[in-house]
Length: 144
Image 1 (cartoon, rainbow, N blue to C red):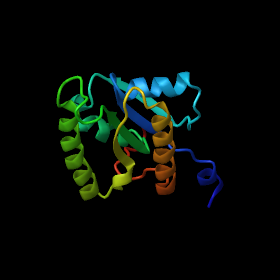
Image 2: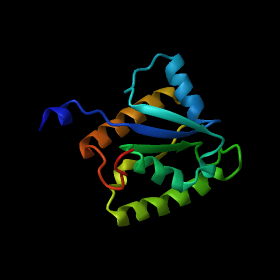
Image 3: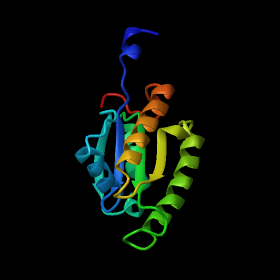
Image 4: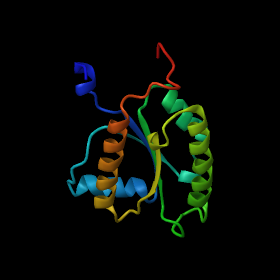
């Protein structure tokens, strides 16, 4: 491998539900749990409100991976928003696979407000999987 790939660290955007996953990330930070710093968090009211085009746009802008995390099924503050999100992102992953983008670049999970350690472990897993894939090249617009 060349030197730039050896030092490469993935850029990951995380869309986190305000009520559960963002609170879980906050708990991980308050508890001083260590996890990779590759993450950029976007706080959203509910995972069900994320437009899949936001994820496509992030990939176009050169992000190497995207994580969407919401409340556990049955715990959504908006009743069924997380179930809507699960359906949306199942379709999105099929679309991205059709475009030739590795499905592991976009991941979906459930993290509650009390699961700070689970959040930290999830971030490590996502970063490791995206590192294995290498830098994103497909769909990335040149000159951005």
